[in-house]
Image (cartoon, rainbow, N blue to C red; front, top):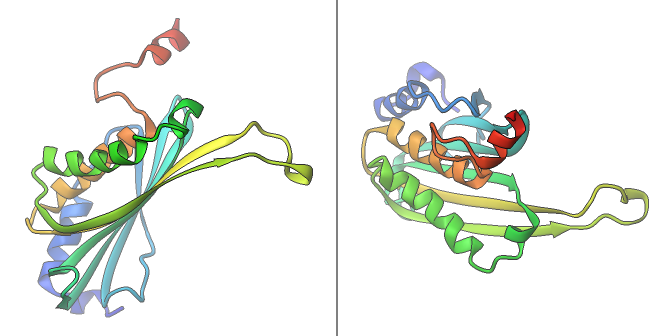
Length: 188
């Protein structure tokens, strides 16, 4: 990666837009080392989503910039994400979950007017049961969202806010300001 002083203005503006945003209290954002081989310039954030003090989801949002552009990107900036979350057993077998999880991303971006093009990705559901030397915890189920899109607006804060909406939905958090029934019972 080139030195920060050599970074193009489009990249430095995008990074500044991502750094300027904050998230809801349940989502802890942190700058992390970005992958170096995907593009000449990159920046990355990690997120940990907490519910009742327990980590229930995590993710990475990576900003890539190639001043020469990419035909597949349809631009010179690209956002890439990987999000993983624990699932409740009944959700793990829901055949509609992949379609719903995909709308968590697109609806989150649309809700914040984070304009984009060339969006694509995969949704993976897994169920794991441990045996033998690994036996112990009850079976687990997980959801993984891998996606990337090309921002067509200069408001990178909107893209981060939209991504946080997807993280919140993936983690099963209620909308901001709304307490879930299980949270109310825990306090009672």
